[in-house]
Length: 432
Image (cartoon, rainbow, N blue to C red; front, top):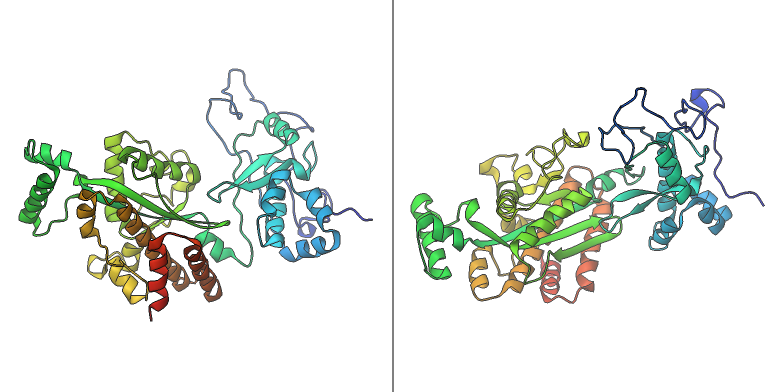
């Protein structure tokens, strides 16, 4: 029986036009290690402490139809020939098998091109692979033999991005996207120090803080440094699906909540989505991180360590790594801004469900932190659904795929036993 493999062209065969995939030829003989040209030069290998550099960049494109035909012909023999055990385990949990295999095959070719080896010089197709972590981020993994080749070449970290021809806009728009929202109460300890309120009870301190704010501005919404974070809710969309949760437990302290949020950014670099996050949530999180001694290097990255962040980072108001929907949809004009509740009502979404931000302090005083966390989660759901509509508006999410994402949210709600999610679904299905 024929071997279950896709045809490959050697790098030396034919002209450039005839080659579908090429890899950069190595300058040294097989197995040689690139070494520094002068004595005393800093070690720039994977374990060295010197400056880092890009070893190589590889790109590969593969039509998924080829994989479909190969799978039909060879079945599991082809999968065992192509995929590492970790990849096979993830394949067993996916529904779109052809797409999964096609993207892994293309990724493997791109990686060995960047290494300069191709599938030779000690590298075989099962010596390198791509698996997704719990947040959906693709990560490069090596077999023991592949790891030896990587280290011999002096290659450190490897990074890979996956996409496909049919779902290009959808993949760019949704995968590894984190929607977030925070809930806050007055920082009464700060209020005591700011206004010399001594030993007054928390409730009296908060009343004084609100009254002084009304005296200064005409409204009782406190300035950002006077907010204390009590809940952070997130919705994460990965290739594995959609997840909704609140960080920590009801007894988790503010410092740990804020650290967990920035730890997620540090590890997985998701695209962030918020409603008024640029003007409220992120500044408040930053102030509280300063107070609690939290580290957030990835969030503050702007190209010094990672060039990819130079023109697309979390800090710029006009970059897509963080989409503040209220800001973007208003055209960055204050007079064009609308509240999340009003936008949800406009689009036929459940909105606030009888609980609003102005009630958070009262709920906090009565010990109803669980109610605050649930309210925060429903705000995240509203924001995610608005973002899906915005992605459709931009042409990044075709109508059919938009409907798929809506059904994905409804399936998550139906599968949950949480009463606030059941209430959200019921209100959504009753909406016009």
